[in-house]
Image 1 (cartoon, rainbow, N blue to C red):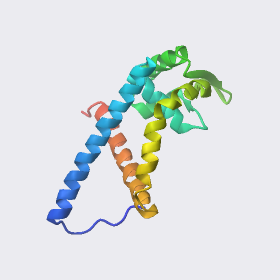
Image 2: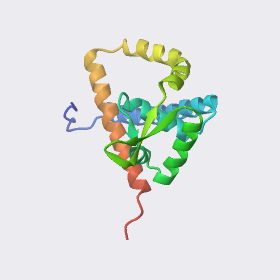
Image 3: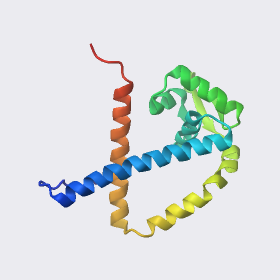
Image 4: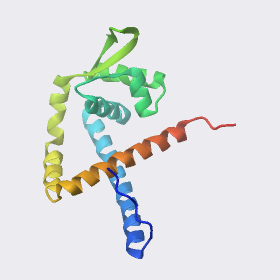
Length: 166
């Protein structure tokens, strides 16, 4: 989906690229602020809320504890603590994988998420209104940009977490 990159630079392109990087940082900071605000409102840790968000993205499927560890960059021990807290708060339930009894499947509670959804009603309405300003072609480009940017950020986050090579 990515368009071929132009071969030359111009002052306008350089300015736009710098503005895009700044806007991306601001979006990331706003996203982190929203995540922390939701966690605080719900009385859970921000990391726990981020795991709830990952589980919600995986719907209708579920994730294993190992997948949560991989997606967050957390250790399996840390993810166990997250799942313990989320289970106590009613956000998730653990199930044994019928194909591999050693593996734990983490399922999001639809009931608990039903309580959470109203927190997002205004934001979702604002996002829908924002998207109406753009053409389908624009939206497709935004999807590509954000998807690839997310992959790049995740790859670099995992590289930062990796032990240094000798």
